[in-house]
Amino acid sequence: MSLFVASLNSGSNGNCYYIGNQNEAILIDAGISCRETERRLRRLGLSLGNVKAIFVTHEHSDHVHGIPSIHKKFKIPVYITTRTLLKAQLTKAEAYNFKAYEAISIGDLSIQAFPILHDATDPHNFIISNKGVNVGIFTDIGDVTDHVIRNFKQCHAAFLESNYDDELLETGRYPIALKNRIRGGYGHLSNVQAGKLFTDHKPHFMSHLFLGHLSRNNNSPRIVQNLFESISGTTEIVVASRYKETKLFSIQAPSGSQSPSFYSGVEFPVQLELF
Ligand SMILES: [Zn+2]
Ligand SMILES: [Zn+2]
Image (cartoon, rainbow, N blue to C red):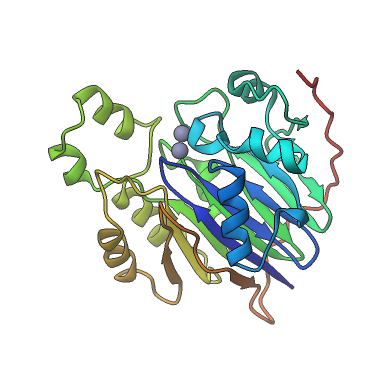
């Protein structure tokens, strides 16, 4: 069984990741407009028609900007914590709560959230599982916690933030307060931190690593590509763009391998007030 994945956009100008099987799909975040989301999916041979849910990591506009326009046209349910919903003020979304480590089923997809450190109200990241294939989203992470490590170790493919190059941030034009916010434990992962997470905790079955949320001012795709290709081993490295979609990738559990499959519970979410 495969999971099909793509980044539709990745960066402080908008984040949106597609994960699906043959029958259904979800988006993690919807940070670009409905029109652009549709256009990029169409180029991949996909459509919002089989996207059954949008899961929201946190309320920053680069992660939720497209939700009102997508809701208006497609009425796709949004899974978002109560506290994040209040902060994001998504007044028209059909919203459902989720809790960390309580799996939610969307058809054959199982989605489990875990908490992260970030300067947002109630930030989470996700593991999406489908018949033994696990794909993780690791973005907007201030620090590499045990939650991050534990989940990263389960992934056949991971979208991992690699936000800034230490030297470019240090010598760049950002005010010192902003520099400290970015690197201060509740901001973003540097290339070095992302690289260390990968080398220290990558499982042997990780076939693809997507690097994302690259800073426009404090990083470059070339730096990230070079760094990760030097440590990639058997894992394919893909740097996700701030401006366009990646290809659609098929992620599979290697045949005969013991794939981790730890999502068995079916959780029926409680619908939140629509306001
Ligand atoms: Zn972000
Ligand atoms: Zn953020």
